[in-house]
Image 1 (cartoon, one colour):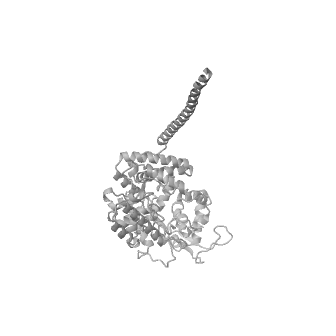
Image 2 (image 1 turned 180 degrees about the horizontal axis):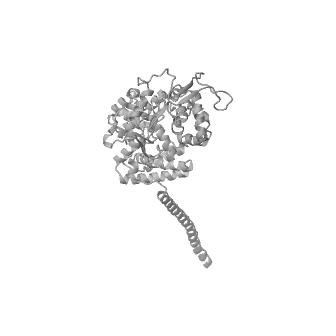
Image 3 (image 1 turned 90 degrees about the horizontal axis):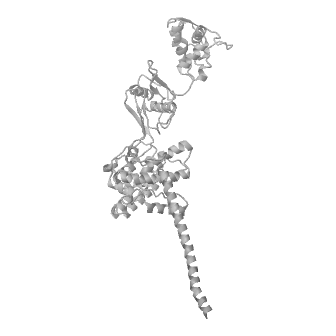
Length: 513
């Protein structure tokens, strides 16, 4: 009996001990999980802090939101003649933007804009799940605030990385996205929702052929209107088009290649109608307004504005930009610059009139006849204007005859053969030269004139007037004999010839050889 009592009292103790051991195991598991969670949270926290405080990372500033990344060019008198860069836009204020434009963008881009604080976690998670299911990155989940930061800061940072490393890695993309979210949160604390929307629509890319950025430029390009005049259907089209500007540009139907079967007008119309449906669903418009706008013909609203230019200054401007890129080693389309030039706008306009046949005293024998020239200030050596040719059209036929390297021909005779004789040989325009057959360049045969005739003794001015080859060759030989060949190599160098040209100077240069 005593043994049974002892055995019975030990079973509950053993059961308690087993339960305690199980409880200890679960406690350890819970502690381990909690520890891992805390370590993970702390690690993520430090990673985020390091990413956010990266000295080479992005920093929020209102100046960065509003500063135009444009270069400016000025003429010889300091007048602004051209503004260019990656962001050619015309800013408008929130008060100038119709409510229909605001509603359209909020409906399709960020319906919870006035509810979140820069980062919409539910939308972001929904977009991430959608991307996981589809295996693509079709859903962005970015708020308008994040898109504003992307346009003003992230893209600039991406360009820097590409310039240094050639491409942006996935790790760098994640890092930039974290910084973008952080700056969006900062922006929401720094500026109003209205200002955020204002900055966003002034920077958004509409992607036309003419570098259209901002709602005002888009309204002008597609509808030839001020943004304040946009109606509901036009607002819905512009809001929808920013998702893929190239795909939803109805004007592309005019310029699409023959093999391109895409109906851009239909795609744009469908996208506009999607935006209108979202506006209806969110209560921004009535059923009647929806039906009326949906059934309107987008093509009837289009009044495409030709934003190309016939500015007579463009040939000079293009040359100046290329010279800046060469001399500065920087691209003024990327790095904002103020560029001061020697352009004389009056002279450039005269050049353009001559090329376009608007000067009665200049008559071209036929349409095939072309020209190319520049006008230089002899006192300073500055180029005042350029004549690129009769068929030069900026952006279409960019061949510039004033820059083309060609044989100078007889234009070298006064520069090399005649003018230097005044200083070096003491000749004058009435000095007598002998137009006769001779092997002036020791080629084994006599030098010919263009008319195959020789006129004997004649004045220097007459020889120049009829462009004699023989007299120019004789004068050049006399000059070389008086100064030596190296003098003329240096002479051509100072005229601006490339080294491989002036180093090979021979007497034939005097007649354009």
